[in-house]
Image 1 (cartoon, rainbow, N blue to C red):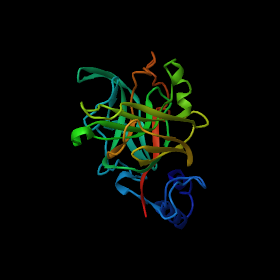
Image 2: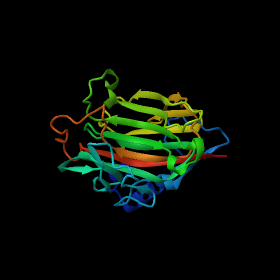
Image 3: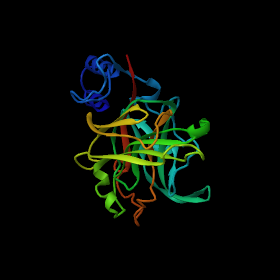
Image 4: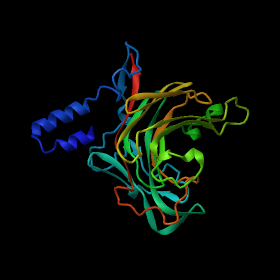
Amino acid sequence: MNRLIKKIKQLTPLMVLLTANAISAQKGPHFLKGQDPKAANQKWELVKNMSDEFNGNKVDESKWQISGQGWIGRAPGLFQAENITVSDGSLKITTRLLPEPIVKQNKTFTHGGGYVGSRNAMKYGYYECEMKANKTFMSSTFWLINEPKELQGCDKRTTELDIQECVGQIVNTAEWMKNFDQKMNSNTHSRNIPEGCDYAKGSNKSSADVGGKVYDDYHVYGVWWKSKDEVLFFLDGKFINKVKPPADYDIEMYLRMVVETYDWNKAPEDGGMNGSKEDRTTTYNWVRSWKLVN
């Protein structure tokens, strides 16, 4: 929808205003006809402190933290706030080759990425974004995770819900990486279980073709975290798959939009940063979080 505003800016001010008002009055998540899973007596309510249309000229740091929240990135990819911008109605995270290697926490970083994390958390609900991936070996992601340091007892474990996790350039020749640049790769993780606690450790995943390369166009990636044992994935408004997490998903989670490096998709010999700035940028047109109310 942000792209729609851009296209009509050459029209009359009144038409621009009417269109902008219609967009700001978003009634619910992006679903194709017949795909909305809510019950007849329910409606979707926007959670404003975990949603953003990115219509300003800088990151709204009352909603988003952009320095990693204690996580500096997986070497060789360093999170740098300077790689994160807001312009033309979009959030942009640009990858780059560092002029000189940087050593932090006894690790050497050669590439720059970025981290955008919500300051607020929620349990259950519908989460979605409109995103176009970058063309590099580095990631383009949209996901949720809890903060064990805030918790006590057996809740001091990690639950992670990956809605989309992809790369633009596949360097790994492993069979499971085949077409990783053409899919919505989703996962439910359970790990770091405290000793003596009866929670399973593992991952249950989902996958769906996006109809081309992930960087060819924008796609709407969504998930309905329905309950502790039901997670439903949606692609471009269409239901894709239902997954049962390996352990109870009943802890509040935070949103993450991250561009990072993976140890299973290493930097190519030439550094992998030969494309234009646009090619090296992951773009989010909007992110929205919703809760069901009666």
